[in-house]
Image 1 (tube, one colour):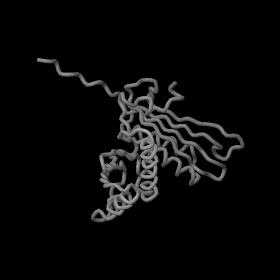
Image 2 (cartoon, rainbow, N blue to C red; image 1 turned 180 degrees about the vertical axis):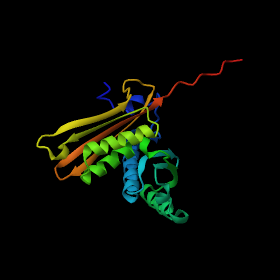
Image 3 (spheres, one colour; image 1 turned 120 degrees about the horizontal axis):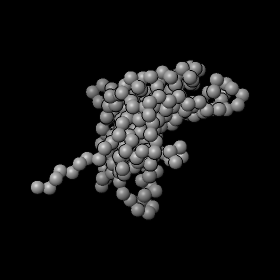
Image 4 (cartoon, rainbow, N blue to C red; image 1 turned 90 degrees about the vertical axis):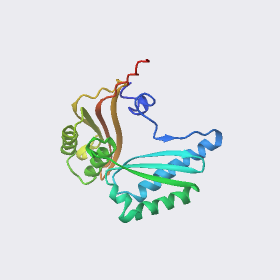
Length: 216
C-alpha cells in the first residue's frame, strides 16, 4: 500500500490538511475546481523563479484567499510590494472576486519535497550526474534535520539504452505509519534522452495526538 497510495492523500484528515478549503455542490463545484487550477497555473507561470512549493486556496462569499509558500518571498513581493500587487490584480481579473494574497516563507527549503524534486529535475536537465545530485540532496536534507529521506529517479538514466530506476535512501521513511509526517513530491526532467521522473519522500518525524486536558 505504501508504494501505491499518495503519501499526503493517505494522511488527509489525520495529520495533513487540505490545500484547497471551500465547499460547493453540483456544477458550481466543477467551475470552482477549474478556477483553482487556473489560479495555480497563473501564479506558477508569473513567478517561475520564486521557488514556490505549494499554493493554498480558501474561499469566502465574494472573496478568495491565496497563500503562497515560497523559499524566495522577496521575488514575489517585489520592491514596495509592486509584484504582489500586480499578481493580485491579475487574480482578481481571472476570478472576478476580491483576492487576498499572503506570502509564507519556507525557512528550510532542503526539507520541502517539492523544492527538492524541482531542484533535482533542473540539475538533470543541466546534465549533472544523477547519482551525485541525488546524494547531495539527501545529505542536505539530513543536515537540515530530516529524520529520513528517499529519492527515486526513473527513465533513461545517464543516456542508457533501457529505462531503469535508481533509489537513494537515508534514515527512516515509514510510509505505512499514519502519524508519520512525510512530505512527498514528484517532478519531471526533460532531457535529450527523454523524460526522467523524480520522486522525493522526506520524513520529518511523528505527529502525536494532543492530549485533552482533564475535565475539572
